[in-house]
Length: 171
Image (cartoon, rainbow, N blue to C red; front, side, top):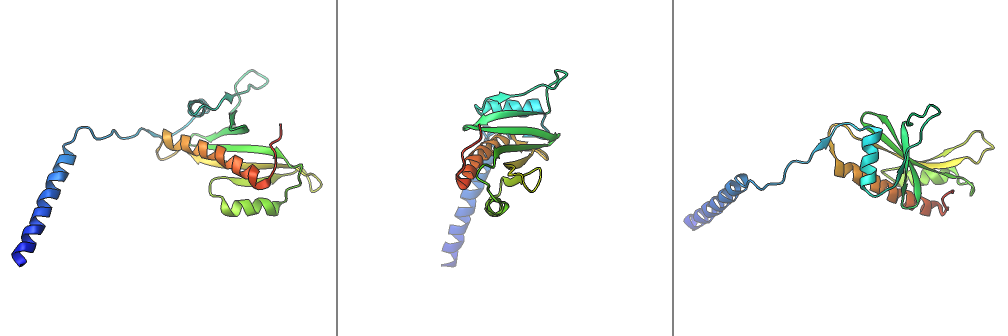
C-alpha cells in the first residue's frame, strides 16, 4: 500500500517536471508587453485616437497648442489634460440646470471608484456646473492597453453618471 502511494506520487512528480521543462523551453511564449512610463499631450491624444474617439486640440492666442485636448466619447465631450509627465486628468462638465445638490453628487462618489463628481460654483447663489473627473496615472510602467481601457471606462462612467443624475448633456 505504501509502495503504491509512493509510486503514484513519483509518477505525478515526473509528469509535472516534464511539463515544466517543456514550458520553459517553449520559444513561442508571448512577448512581455511594452510598459509606458510617461505621457505627453501628443502621445495621449494618439492613444485616444487609436480607440476611435475624434480629438480636437486648440491653440492659444500666439498660435501654440494648448496643454489639453478634448475628445468625443459616446456623445460626451471629454477634456484630457496632461498634468505631469505621468498623470492625465479626464473630465466632463455639464450645466446644473436641474439644481443637483452636493448631497446627490456625494451619493455618486460613495459608490464610484474611477471618477469623482463635483459641483463648481462662483458663489452661493450660482447653480454652477456639474463635473466628473478621473486621474489616470502613467507611472511605474503601465501598458498601453491598460491606459486605453481606463479611457474607455471613463467614457462609460460619464454615461452612467448622467443616467444617475437623469440629466441631458449640455450642448
